[in-house]
Image (cartoon, rainbow, N blue to C red; front, side, top):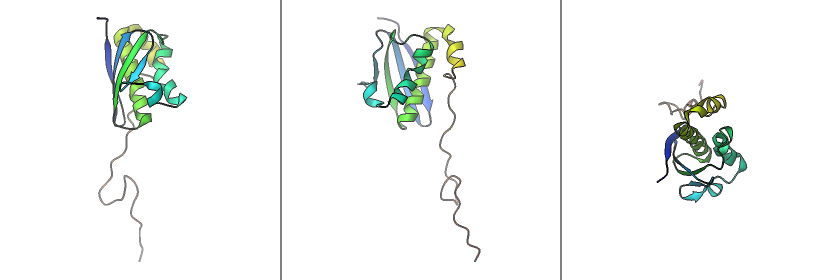
Length: 129
């Protein structure tokens, strides 16, 4: 069996697990072609970005499982997971991926709702009289 490189990426509530195996560049997410799950070119480009930065676009087959969150969060999680898996494959790719900002987990997430308020920051209407 050929070598497999695995990694995990997260964004907001989305979690993505990725398995990289040497191959022809086929990408399946949740057992479907990734073009079906991410229909826009923007999201597709976002997922392919780590592969393009490291010049290994058609050298790996990618199998991924993406759970929770929305499409954009899942795309970001996949991007991080692919970048991390590429470092497991070859540590010398790290400077290029880091310079492109692909190894930083985006810490932004939804702020929690506070008690005594209708939302995280919104206040109930103030009545003077």
